[in-house]
Image (cartoon, rainbow, N blue to C red; front, side, top):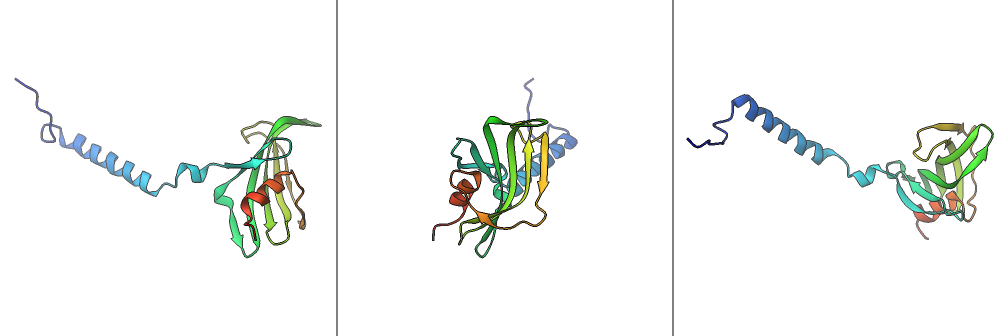
Length: 148
């Protein structure tokens, strides 16, 4: 006797379970943002050849001001009292018309995966300053602010 496999030969509980799993998977794929939109993407390198990345979901614009969170992986550890820094994450605002930047908050990490916080600073009264060539802020400004 040959075994026949179709929806009629499968117990209804299993068939229902399979349909629910399939519908759930399709809905998850449909509503999930693309993986590339969630992960930081490289936008350039500093003068010291450190990769600079932006967190795409943090980029917002209000007139000439552009806010973003930028990450840097240091090619060589930064030696500081209390341990080495291997990476950083900085929340900042660019003034795209005047080539200026204001740092709101920064983290330095004792690893390259942005997990072990070694230092965290929130600017008390942030003010705009000049974007310095070759720096992380220069890479961010050049990549994120449109040319006028």
